[in-house]
Image (cartoon, rainbow, N blue to C red; front, top):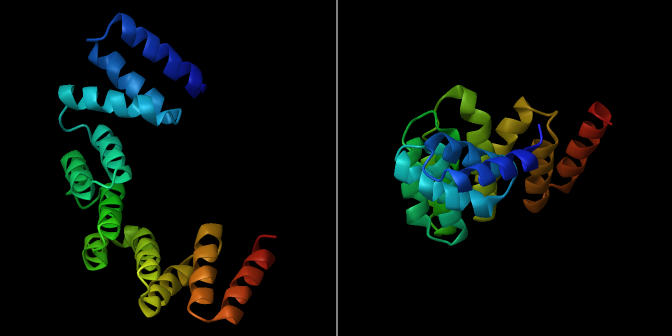
Length: 187
């Protein structure tokens, strides 16, 4: 349960046995779990050379590409790691955000709306609301955020997004009411 120690241990073990695939994988996961993105990115490149379909490594490399504003490269990484599968919610949502970064909000929404499974509705509509709001489409943002707020009023992140979107669209009393209702529910 000590991610820093695990990351250091596997990094050192890998130095003494650099061709050991199991050590490489464990060092990569430990670096990622510890939040050491620099090491995780370097190790992800090596993991991909050994396992071209490693979804976690492709996810890390996609995030690296997003940070560098190489959105097409990011989408390619996400799809190589399984982002094309219906159930890969993280890769699908991140792919949607790459379109926002590339100033293509229509494709962003189309991408995340591919998450049709009802179990993903909360994530889909939450991210769609944020995307619409960021793009200045207030009516669509309100429509999407209201759907999830009505379904889940006990999650602070959702309540906060709802209130902020409502306030930005001019409904300050509703924003205040949402915060007050949450405070009564979970003081």
